[in-house]
Length: 107
Image (cartoon, rainbow, N blue to C red; front, side, top):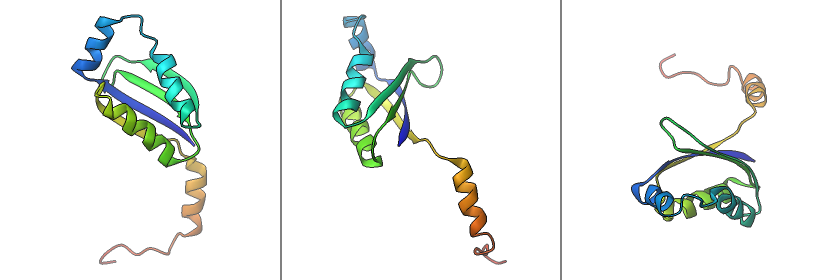
């Protein structure tokens, strides 16, 4: 399963960068993903609503959530979102198979 993590650094997280501007965040994030049994794919720093984007593959939602919980507990980020990649064609195919099975309220 592939996930996209989006985060906003906290003041404490930014202070960590000031303290050590050469801190290798790619290595730190790769290590936690690998320890969860997953595969680190990419890390990008962003300008805009989010400061960081990480793409990783893990075997389950629970493994991805465990990574999220551990990173959030560090206090380095104020906000951390976890989005799961989906197969829209598969979803549309499944919806097509059950078309007509649902009736809206009052219809």
